[in-house]
View 1 (cartoon, one colour):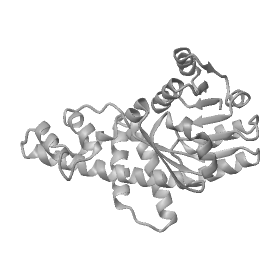
View 2 (cartoon, rainbow, N blue to C red; view 1 turned 30 degrees about the horizontal axis):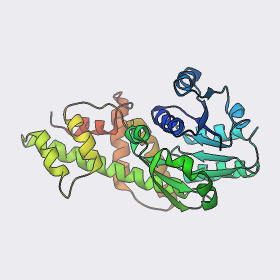
View 3 (spheres, rainbow, N blue to C red; view 1 turned 90 degrees about the horizontal axis):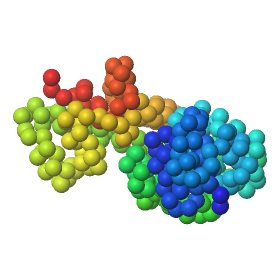
Length: 285
């Protein structure tokens, strides 16, 4: 199956490299063409000028873009030239309703759609160890599974279209709570005058250990917030979670608190930092 990738941000580039390494990637497209041109040279694949040009030669189109409207705009463009039997796999983080709308647009062209958001951050994208949550037809997933395995350590089929995005929303709510807990706990430890590296090492090995503490604890306490997952993007995702919760009349106070804190940090110009920048609000002065 000839495969193309649309969206070459920090996640998309790592995905593209792993797809190319496995021999699946034939073409890429990015709104900023210079980024696509440079990566195409590196990976010895083609950079195309538009999404429409991609579908003329590609059977499986992978998307990794930023927001709901971006997904719908790209899918609408793909529908102009997409061939029947093609598969579009959206790895962006958007709402379940957007996934269903995209699937409906493609169904009119006799093309299949999977919503397949991922978790694992830039590190997971670079290493090919992402966890993927898939909604859509299970038979379509099995057709493209070998391609997806080039980027992932785990692929889970969650149910019909939109289920992948619903599961990703669960993941993002958990990330908010973990971020709040870890940053608050480390601020508490620092206020006690403890040696932070030792605290992080010993706590990481116990019942309170988690990926975020292990991989971000030492950097945040040293004032380093290089993005693995940009704060502004998590804010965007949590707005989706908030909307989904409201539709079910569900109260999510941790999500609300994190949205408030992120908004404060974004106003201070920290939106492009890692979500561990939440520590800026917690640490002792």
